[in-house]
Image (tube, rainbow, N blue to C red; front, side, top):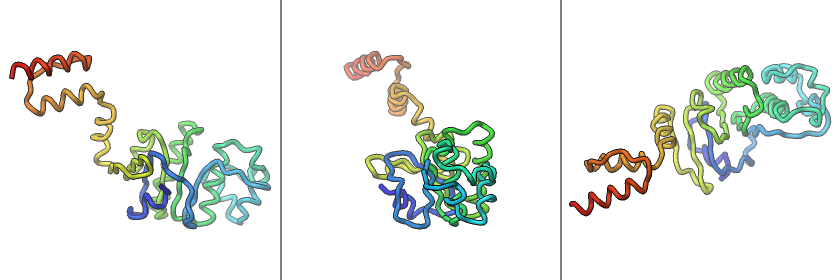
Length: 206
């Protein structure tokens, strides 16, 4: 499923977290896809704008990068340069692909604030592709879960803790909770086999 199709009916100027098998490419010109993009020539030639220095500063890179070629940049730097390019081109949708992976704590904190500014002050729609929603739960407005190229769930921020509880709770505990809700009195068991034996005993005695 193409990323543009996933959020085509969603509110703009928000931050979305995406998980699943998503096609990050898009034919929509208003989307800036932030990957470890390699380019020909120097960073200055790639950005090709009088705003290049300011754009680099926004992504924590200085003007010395203008003379660098992509081959001499790290993956993290290439992603930031790609983000700077999206700023210069005025993209309204910013799609981030594992953007924080190589960043340290201070850099992550800065970009968290930057993403929120982009969404709420500059009215950009920020789309974060990740396999760890805990990394973005405090800034994302909504999480979108995709499986087999179909949206199977959306979780708003106020439902986050319910979702995390459901994800992190072992199957055995969820199963016991289900039985308790049906007013079947049993103890907590550590193994599913023990629980099954208890259920059979309950069934035989009923």
